Amino acid sequence: MSKRCRTVILISGSGTNLQAFLDAAREPDYPLDIVGVISDNADAFGLTRAERAGVATAVVSRERNAPRAAFDTALAKAVNGFAPSLVILAGFMRIIAGELIEQYAGRMLNIHPALLPRYKGLHTHRRALEHGDREHGTTVHFVTAQLDDGPSILQAALRIRADDDEASLSARVQAMEHKIYPLVGRWFGEKRLRMHADCAILDDKPLNAPLVLQEDELC
Ligand code: GRF
Picture 1 (tube, helix red, strand yellow):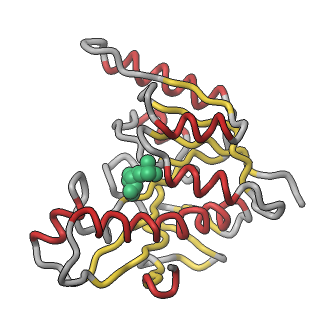
Picture 2 (cartoon, rainbow, N blue to C red; picture 1 turned 120 degrees about the vertical axis):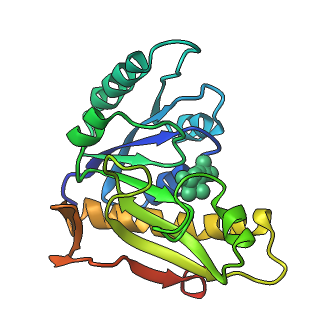
């Protein structure tokens, strides 16, 4: 196989999406090489997952009352230290500085637990339920300077059931995330996916709307 794509994953918590990438990367033909995991939270269980997989870790925490610029500089240093070709945000709960986003334009991915452009920000499952939505899901997108924005690549969608609550919806959405996020990573690593002029391009075709997979196709 040709050289694998050096990839850094940024987390803040449990790291189930990180785990999905670590599992995928054990496959001999998976094109991403997870070279580092960075957390802003020293207690994140995702750090343990990385250590168990033999992946280098770094913690960049935001000290209370410390200037934001100090965190931004430390994060950029940690990311650049791994010399990645791809940066994956997997539940990273900090706003990333514009300079770092710019530096990795077209090489930084995020997953957001909603069918963007619906429900940017937090509490997406609760908001979908409160709104009486019949459909919900998750979106993988390139990161641009606007929060939870940037060209969408792939969505996974499900039908909300009458007995769904926030917890069940979260679990169903996460199960789909663990399938679609490594898949998008594969496309990137195989050089089938790129971003141009704020548009995602897959197999040389601009994605004017994200591709959508349904829950029953995934789980
Ligand atoms: C995911 O649901 C993702 O959509 C959101 O943060 C969550 C991270 O979960 N951005 P985990 O740490 O990967 O379990």
